Figure (cartoon, one colour):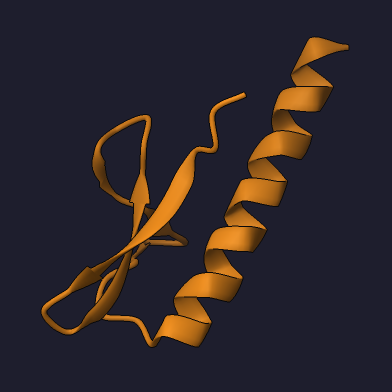
Length: 60
């Protein structure tokens, strides 16, 4: 199963990328760029968990 979101370093910190679009993830209107590593790491885990839960509901 594809993990949808991942983090990569950028010039201002870390960016969360959406692998389905190939672009930075947008969360509640906020483009996820220039984040501290700890924040990016926590947010990417949350986004991937929510995505997996969403996909699980779609299968039932």
